[in-house]
Length: 522
Image (cartoon, rainbow, N blue to C red; front, side, top):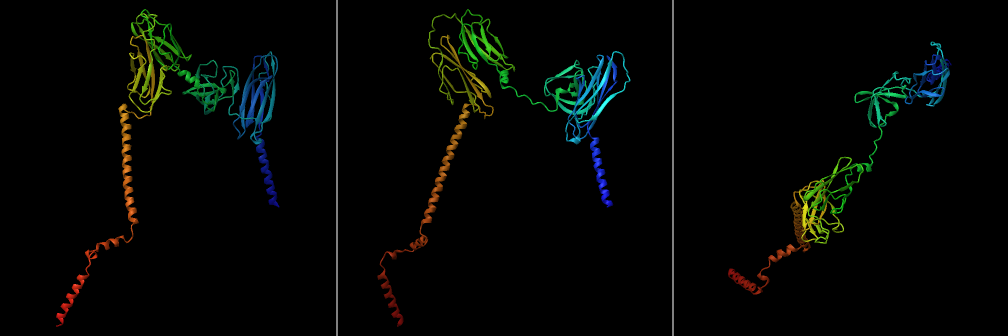
């Protein structure tokens, strides 16, 4: 019986201890002011005490927010924290300070409980009791805890109290890092996602912001708490159209006032010809870029000399890549209005490239072509036939191809020099092809491979025929009679006696034996 009583008492004591432990951990909050009576211009100190696992509290003065405190990361135990805020008396009367929000303790399954505490301060036109007592109110509630203590002040002279920290944070946008907690202090601008080392946190609002202490490139800086995050912001994917715009170095139009370009303008064609009279010294060129962010420069269109002049139009894209359009301007005798000696416009009537088939056939009115090489060669075998038999044909750039883009230009000039035309072939040599020295080497490699393949096929066919003959002989031998060997041996014993009648000889031999036998009997 005594043992049972002891056991019951032990259970009761343990239950009370657990209850007290839970009670001790119950969340509480309180607010107090000092002094309770002030004169206009004096400062009131408001003290807030919190004992909870988490909290989200706001302090107001006559309904206007003057500070707030938040802790949302601790669930394991209650934290006891003290916060201070400051209020400057501005007019005669009373002001009501209210602490409201939610607090949570660990023993109520993180259930938030609303709290509201208030205290009143009297403001006088004359000095009040500077040593006035504190007025306070406290009670049980639930909210979230903070690792920081601090104060709120609108004064630049107030220094925030920082709680040491050590973790990596990132900026939420393009922000300023300050040399102090003043918005007017020297600033260093950094981009979104800049990595910083957080060294101190605070809950004090200075100049309207809660400041954090960080380290950037080994230098201590300060930043508003709402401008950093613990997770690095995702990098924005570049806009494909914007990227293309940055690299766009093409012309959208190219004209010369009163002069015809040959061939007609195309953004991908960079070589042109034009003819001007002997009295023309300058030409007016209108060149417009496709991208509004690209720049166009023109050189060589002034002070033309007799003969050929090279005019260059350079388009510089936003990323500084350049593309040059060239116009060969021939200055000669004054152009007469009569028709040229050859009324047919100068063109190619046929264009052939060994190993290349033009899609839909060659088009004389198409002046630009593209070709991709799967083998490394030095040049193309090109046959260019003009529609004027006496026209001059020049092929430029068809030598020593390099990996990447190569430009081959076919220039046509009429016999009297009055007409010009040009065709361009952009030859792209891939970077991952096997390099050869020239076309002949390509033919030797492929031709040698073909011959080797033919020889190998003939050898295999011959071996198969021999094997087939041996197999036929073997099959024939297996089909012969099994007593073939005996038959052969028997044939070897056949003599002339098998073909002659020897009976008379045998009779003579017998008579001779009988006569001899009679003599012995005597």
